[in-house]
Amino acid sequence: MIQRSTLPKVLLLLAGFVFFSANTVHFLGEPATDGALHASIGKNYQFDFDHVRKGPYLNVKSALLVNYENGEVVYAKNPDMKRSVASISKLVTAMVVLDSGIDLDSVTETITRTDARRSSRSRLMVGYEMTLRDLLHACLMNSDNRAARALARAVSGSIEEFAVQMNRKVKKLGLENTVFYEPSGLDARNVSTAHEIAKILHYAFDYELIAHITSLKHYDCRVLNSRNQIVPMANTNLLIHSRYDVLAGKTGYIRAADYCLATLVQADDGQRLTLVVLGAPFDRIRFREARKLLDWGVRELQQEPVMAQASG
Image 1 (cartoon, helix red, strand yellow):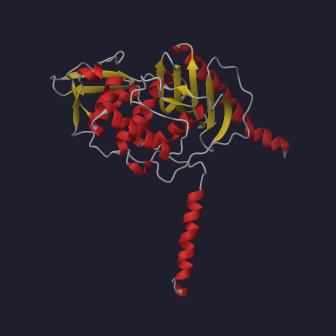
Image 2 (cartoon, one colour; image 1 turned 90 degrees about the vertical axis):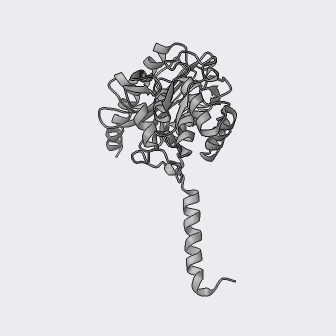
Image 3 (cartoon, rainbow, N blue to C red; image 1 turned 180 degrees about the horizontal axis):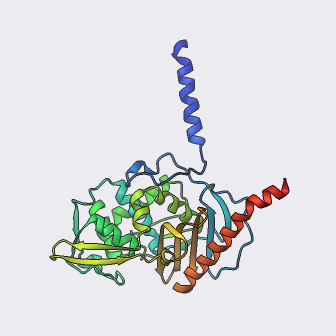
C-alpha cells in the first residue's frame, strides 16, 4: 500500500514516464558522442508529411527531402516503397559496431579470403591487418565491403550474428520496413524505404564518429603488418565536392538497388537538409538529381518567411 506522503512523488514519476514515452518530437542539436549506445537513446525522429510540395521531376525510383531543423518533409516520391538499399546498409553496420563499445584502436582484424570473396572492388588485400578505426573509415568512406565484413566478425564473431544485431538495432529505432541479412549491402535482401533511410541517417548523425568520417574528403588507412604502407581512401559521396557542406551520408550500389544516396547537407544560408534518392539508373544521374532536389529545396525554404509575412 502506498503511503499518503509518497503519493505525490509516485504521481510525479508516472507523469514523467508518460511524457517521455509519448515524446516524439524531432530532436535537434549537434552530434552526440563518439558512438556509445546512448547516442540514440531517448530520440524518436518523426517526419511531418503535411506540407509536401510538388517538386521537380527526378529520374529515380524513390526520394525524400527533409528539413532537418524541424522534420518537415519538403519533397517525397514513393517514400514508403521497399527497395534494396545496397551500401547504405553500412550506416547501421557502423552504429552496431560503435554500440558494442569495442576498442577501435587496440583491436585489429586481418582481411581474410572469406572477406574478399565476391566483395566487389577493394583496396584492402587479403592479409592486411588494420585497426577497427581504419576499417570503419574504409567501410564508410570508400564503401569497402571487405572492411564491413571484418568489422562484423570482430564485433559478433560471424556475419549471421551481426545481422541479428543490425535488425535488433533498427527495431529499437522503430523502423518496421527495414531488414538486413549482412553488413555490407551486397545482399539484395537488405531493404528499406526512403522514409526509413532518412531516419537511419538522422540516428547515424547522432554518432559523432560516423558524422566525422562520412564528412571527410580523404583519409589514409595504415596496414599494420606491412611497414609504412598507407591505403588512401576517398569519399564516394561526390556532393562533398559541391557547394553544399556534407555533414554525413552514404552512397550505395548493387544491380538490384541501382544507384542510391543518403546525405545530410548544410547550405550556404545554414539550412540543413536530409536527402535520400534510391534507384537512380546511373552514377552521374544519382548526383545530378540530388543536386537538383537540393537546389530546389533550398529555394523553397528560403521563401517560407516571405510567404508567411505576406499572408499575415
